[in-house]
Length: 295
Image (cartoon, rainbow, N blue to C red; front, top):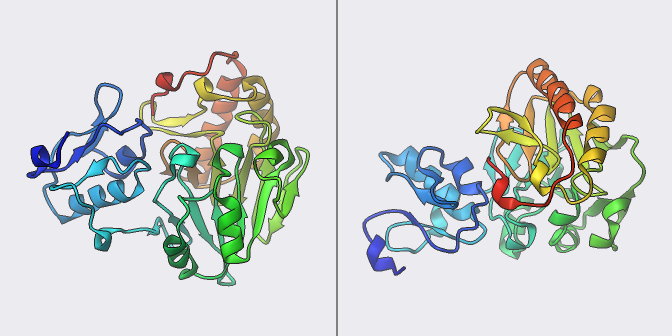
């Protein structure tokens, strides 16, 4: 698939892994066709051009390509502000299955990183421009690949749960058990075993929920969902974790590693989370099947 065929428009090349990241950032422009992402139509204005550039610079396989095939670094929007407190890192990594990662700004001017983008000193410099990064919070083992390098670059503490400690054995802080822990003012770690044994959800300011891969916003169902077909540890444990934790969680922003983001009133999120807890109780273990996921 040469660039010449696409000199007149955006396209998605054959390296696409159907991770959904591009579709999150360019809805209506990029969609799923035949089990992978595809450009549905070309952009009509500058706002849509910006969406496609964001998708291209987030894609972990660099499969989203502009006319001519060459990405323009000057059009890289990351880190991308979701509001005045949270930025999306972009530049997703092949070593974390293309997971999203975030920067959480704190009132004292410091910053926490939740999971990590691909490793790059240049990206680290961009992140540091928002403020001193004090902590790198890993939600679970699948997203641990670059944690140590970013933590060392920032002089930050690296966090992981004991259940996934073998993925980051040199972590500086190890969460244990299933009780919630306040790790910084306004930031609470909620161990949530299920997707993996050491999965953790981080709740900030009763407003932001960094859910890792425990649950996400589904565009297909327009609701909060679990990825039952990609649960490495135990769907039964995930159901128990939700039953133990759901009533303790209050947030407006759902910010997962995989799957879409969503902002809703806190009462609406709480209601949906209670309903998810009930639905998850009815699920039973099934073989891992990435193709069964419908974002």
